[in-house]
Length: 113
Length: 111
Image 1 (cartoon, chains in turn blue, purple):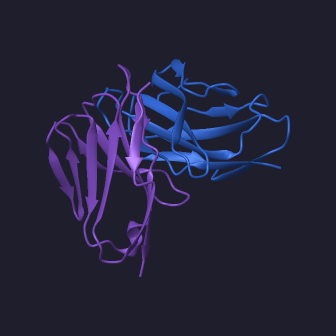
Image 2 (cartoon, one colour; image 1 turned 135 degrees about the vertical axis):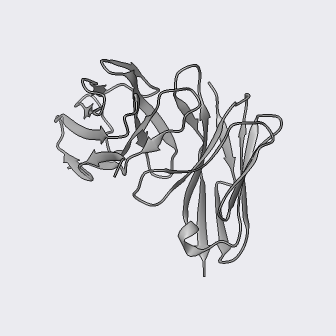
């Protein structure tokens, strides 16, 4: 089935540790996105990529990094510089045109040990 | 930047009741999207609206693109327990393919 796969579903991070969240899509979408969702809150954009080998910062990029080496993959690294990383992280993709809807994965919940 | 305000923030209704929620913007939108998020899952697209005044249905859900292009409405008829979740509106931001999401309406359904 076509879709977006995020892994792992749950992730735990120790203080000072970097962790990487995986996002893979087989929808042949050009654009991919990472959002952060805190309890009871909406979605805030971390990074987005309109095309392979290119990405831009979103509204809350500090403490995060991404890469887009392949069309189908857009991993997010939560670095030790992110002091409050506990949140629900959502990956999405779209065809990349302005009015196209985004389609989401099932999310990764990151917690601090 | 653009902001989307949703109301109500939360609502508790009885099974079988109809539900209405809305989304307003400080600026004009050319597209309105409505998503539903179940607990612990990613948002799922319910309805997409592309034209001012457009009224679109998806089963028991009906959404409208306001004629001012600054608002949109979502109605759910004859609610059932699986309607529980958070409903988000969204619209395109700037010239890229980014979306701005509303603050969400949390729906609880009691039997």
